Length: 367
Image (cartoon, rainbow, N blue to C red; front, side, top):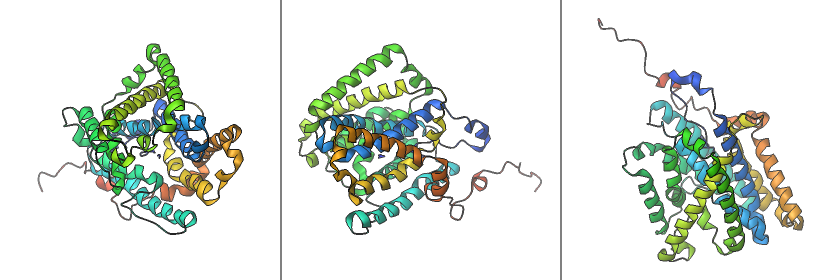
């Protein structure tokens, strides 16, 4: 997003079986609004990254944002993976919606590095920039049936996350993020729609805002001393020059902060259809495409070397441009133009849905 994001489909609901197709057309406005808000925040976060070194305010908001926006995306991925059992039609969606875009955009971002780094660099084993999310989503999605047979899934996933922090994590498939973000995915798998509705009750909704303001204040005071890899979830304790004994309480505090921010976010998401709600089903486009702009503007064109962007007015301008970019990349013309690479059709390689559906014709008992 991370995406650093998703929009998992990053993040869209698992397609329903053929018998349930009429219901598939009825999208839940609440989740569409949530996905739309999150992808906008992802683009903003990547746009803020070059500004954090010279502004305590931007750094505080950046650290706060990263403490919850990818966990929220991942939680929604888990929520929409509840029905995943590994059926052929579901596996087809994994191949066309996750694996194929991962290969395509790994290559495209490898080509981008010719401009940025002066050399072509492409490796499917080592995700570059936001492509880590697709690799992680593949692992989470295909292993989701396992969590239904684990007795204490959230506890086990949390212990795995903490255990990963205690290791020196390799970069292959960005395994650190896969393991450390895992609890958010597993929590999402066991949530129901009424849990999100419960968050909107006044005794949760309003105190959550107060706690969020406290978090922002603490981020302003202390975030400058915190290694950003703590919120990227991609390295172990010793890789961040922290002892394992010290790392554990920091990890638990940061997870508690994430929970506070997640509650606030989901409590305040509108539960009604608005003019832009439908864009929440096109977040994959903004997620995969915005990196070319944010990466190119920073490293390719040097726009962030301009003194203006490091002023308060400049930070606001960057934020507004990021919002505009997110909406532009989800617009119908951009989606039409880039659909072959964002949502590739693999009919030449993968069996069609009709071919994957079992025959409904009764067997001929006389044959």
